[in-house]
Image (cartoon, rainbow, N blue to C red; front, side, top):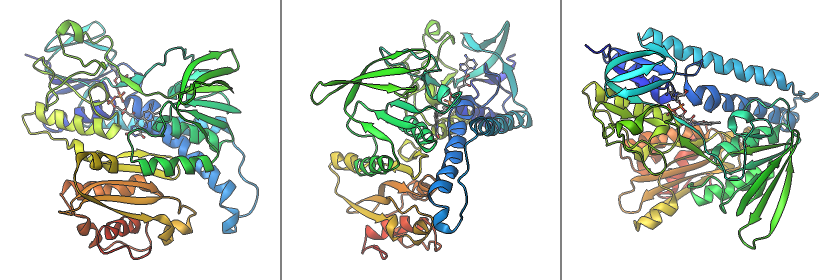
Amino acid sequence: MANYDVIIIGSGPGGYVAAIRAAQLGLKTACVEGRETLGGTCLNIGCIPSKALLHATHQLHEAEHNFAKMGLKGKSPSVDWKQMLAYKDEVVTTNTKGVEFLLKKNKVDWLKGWGSIPEPGKVKVGDEVHETKNIIVATGSVPSSLPGVEVDEKIVVTSTGALELPKIPKKMVVIGAGVIGLEMGSVYARLGTEVTVVEYLDAITPGMDAEVQKQFQKILTKQGLKFIMGAAVQGVEATKTKAKVSYKLKKDNSEAVLDADVVLVATGRKPYTGGLGLEALGVEMSERGQIKTDAHWQTNVKGIYAIGDAIAGPMLAHKAEDEGMAAAETVAGKHGHVNYGVIPGVVYTHPEVATVGQTEEQVKESGRAYKVGKFSFMGNGRAKAVFAADGFVKLIADKETDRILGCHIIGPGAGDLIHEICVAMEFGASAEDVAMTCHAHPTFSEAVREAALACGDGAIHM
Ligand SMILES: Cc1cc2nc3c(=O)[nH]c(=O)nc-3n(C[C@H](O)[C@H](O)[C@H](O)COP(=O)(O)OP(=O)(O)OC[C@H]3O[C@@H](n4cnc5c(N)ncnc54)[C@H](O)[C@@H]3O)c2cc1C
């Protein structure tokens, strides 16, 4: 008799959500976690702590730049960095404890330690081997390295080090203009750090709608971030207190060096599957180190499933969560489902950037006839009232059927606004469906409706 119906290895958003759903469906479930606390990268060193620092520094920005305009006078707050880090840690603890509570509540056993799979149907944690009918691998990802750059997590850091620097650096070089680099770059820029972002490509946030990329870079530049685009980093030389980043510009091969107190390497993440024993089991992996699965998250070895950052697809917490639920449902004999065409992506800078579905470039390439409805937050009363009118909503719909194909928002609350379009897309809605839905005034959401109206007879407030 197996001890468990399912053992999940890893307690990040993929793993703990899979565990809760499996237990809810009546499966005897355990979750293995080697870290001291539950919640994975996301809760411990990812989504949650970064958002805490983004929130705190945004408050500072508001106090410094907008309070006086609203008649709120007085000295701007000074920064107590130690306290800000303590606040961030407190937010992390509350969340990781919350996951611990949820696992207990759902009667999921937390098997503490690093797990491996000696053979299908068995999971070894420490010296103990647990038998199980199914295994879900949810071991997540780690920062990817860059040739010629050695990370010490003090002067040359990944996002993990950037979340707990002992002091606010005067100068920071961020290698990589992806989501993590820009979010952490924004945090430090708001704290007064001179931030220079060096990016190999010619546009920031690779893969996003080009119009959004351009506007986003403009706004961040206005906020004080410097960008060196089309630059290949050649190496980083670090001492105990400083670093030098050398780079070569692709356009003319010219070389230059940047000085920094801290260098943040934010060049992406790679799946983490070390120590599981997958190779010996013959589990197929992609060239990029991702575990290969079928459409039901099962690997080529029966009874072993994989989800989240460890498999293909966007490395996002909510994608991992959806796969966690769906894989657990599959294991329980139900029909788990994830619609990969409707997974939103959000950058939590200020303004936020949010996107779902196809970019205009992708639609164009598909050869499909399409229309674009755009609405600037300049025409949104609420956005103007809170000094957040930079940005727009861009809705893309099929020219013939009016069905929504994608939405790209840069503006206040974009990360929340996008979900209206996610739901619309799930229901196969048209731009007109959104345009005909009454939206409360004054809200940022009205900008989404106006973009939908712009796909038809025209926006009202533009
Ligand atoms: C700075 C930063 C900010 C981010 N911000 C966002 C954001 O705002 N929104 C968003 O959607 N995504 C964000 N992400 C990405 C997000 O964190 C990941 O996509 C998400 O955590 C992936 O979830 P997961 O469950 O696949 O793996 P993880 O969260 O990485 O969890 C995997 C867990 O498995 C454990 N583990 C690994 N191997 C073993 C083993 N052998 N035995 C036991 N335990 C093991 C690890 O210790 C880890 O706790 C951010 C990431 C970073 C680094």
